[in-house]
Picture: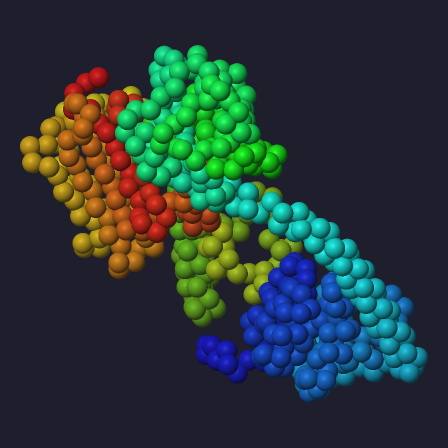
Length: 635
């Protein structure tokens, strides 16, 4: 049979916002026509102008622009293209309004599948419908257009008034913001630095530099308490004077009379409008121009661990806005300092949280439930294959019988098999004669819709694939929990064997091992699963492209009695917001392209059982590296 050239098939554009309706028309027309689709009026108009279809089907009740308005719009640009209303609107006058709007036909839903294609063919070959009392209905349609236009104008006018009101409000807000812009600019710079700088010395020095430059203050310095909380020691100071005082280990007693000591001791800001009037104020020879000073405590959760000093050459230099802004910066700075001190602890805690989440997710699936699901799914792939094989056998028998002359057909051994099959159907309550009658009543063109061997085979494939997915999930959940068979073995050999067994293209995966690499103590089979999973994930993340590069390395770890394995790739990397989620069971970025979301959680479970650790490091656009630490002896 010759397949029609798609370029010779008529093009039909269907503009319909209901997906089910589009799907039905697709099934009815896709064999004999090139079917284009749009789910809204605007896209439909543009698609029609771009493609010049042979026929346009229009739903009437479309959002924004109705189907009648679309017909009117297209009638001027595509006067020779017939447009047919396909709608569930059967109210009085609906047909006539559609025809006067520019449609040449009116078809109702639900679609009559027996006559639908014949009707479409008729409209393609010139069938036209005309409205009775066209002038009356045209006038009603024009009134509908005017009312729609008035409604849109009213909506736009209301929106314009609202935007005008918002504009006035925004001007007030902008005016207020401009008054504080200078202060906020400095606060923003400090805030940016505390989120991007984790080196404490750099953070403190950058902060005092920004404060002095943006506020044009004479001097700023940051003091932190010593371990015994007896002294406030200068950690960063502005300019040459600040650098010299830091080098000289400048410090102030917390129990003394200094402003820094008072701010720390009382957990409250201190201000001196004119230091010349303060007899006990320390006259620092390195800061001879100081005339006013402010000291603000650095505190988090009620715990004060330092103070910020800001000094000016002007008397009474600090306004309320300065105090509020600088105290806000001091609070942010206190948090940043605390975070810098705790960075290592936070990283360790983060890894522990990820592991805890993984274990909690795995624990939610009980052993009995997992086994029950697996046992129920296990026979399905085999059953699907047997059904497919039986189906092929029956088709082969019936094909043989159909090809035989009538006088030979009844005598052929296959005929007896067919008779037994039909008898078996009757015994099992299947009324084959009734089914024959039902099929005989169908139009010949509809038979391919109900007797589709391709669809049957596709359904069997879906059943088999779904069952195999269930079994894979069972293996991913149960596999890591099996009793570990730990042994001492050569890691380099396992890596090479694993890479070779995966059958990936040449030079995609490379490996390297340190000389005299210690043997490790783990379950060889389970560790092989981990390596396969990590390499497979990298290969899929790289899009299986020719440029993909994956490297597996093994070397002694800095941690005593451990070996370090790294699986690195040159892919797009893992976004920070995803990096903390990848170890959670059932989390996957593969969507409908495969993956159960259990691979990495299973890897973590296996490595943890072995007494090791696993984590990932990545920067977006710079690839990803998965790191494993495994013990060299039993722990």
